[in-house]
Length: 274
Ligand SMILES: C[S@@+](CC[C@H](N)C(=O)[O-])C[C@H]1O[C@@H](n2cnc3c(N)ncnc32)[C@H](O)[C@@H]1O
Image 1 (cartoon, rainbow, N blue to C red):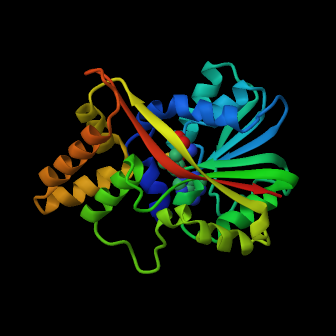
Image 2: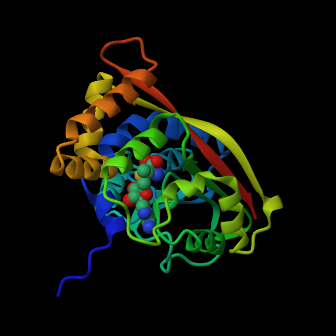
Image 3: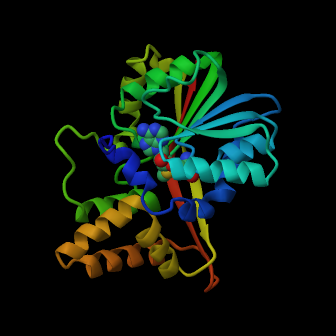
């Protein structure tokens, strides 16, 4: 008998997120530079995709494990590490809400950049993050912010307006971009608010093509936008969705070149010092 489908896994195995991740390489590298990653540091990257932050951490000499629910992205990450000769970086399949394969207190730094925020059961996420971090270690999350006017929050907002409503009890991933929710969820894992700090940070998406061509990448390869188009096509609204996204990408593009797109997006950087 087939195992029941996990919609969380299916969403991210859909399409090919590596196509979007290519536009995130520079900012992934820059973020890791800012986190003080050094040789030998034990780093766990949760919801790591194909290694936007895991690979740069390994390039700095850290011992990196990337965990992701999507088997295609785990395979892509392992292939990138192999091509780069990074024996100190490996990727494995897993769910951030149940990291049964990861021992307690095994990591100095646990990062999750736009990763764990997408897991259902948000209260389970900090419990697992705290369990696998050593005392004195750090947890860093990057979370998109609800109603923020910049790129990704707007793509997700527009996409969800065209997608059928989620099942009852579904907690929006965007709630991870609200500081009081982060504090409440880490409190559930025994972490007092004084140990948590917040900062606004920026990821820049760089695409070697026009903003319209970049919209096309999202339409063809980014699970949440693919789902929105599938639903919109059924009720004749696909052209409206396309137009909204094109307007958004054109408006936010900061590149002056015709054949390049550069769009900054604001996120909430959460630092938990254990
Ligand atoms: C927006 S992508 C970001 C990927 C990567 N961190 C990056 O910045 O390129 C979200 C990632 O979270 C992963 N993800 C979603 N839910 C997850 C879960 N429950 N456990 C592990 N990974 C998950 C997805 O498979 C996907 O790779």
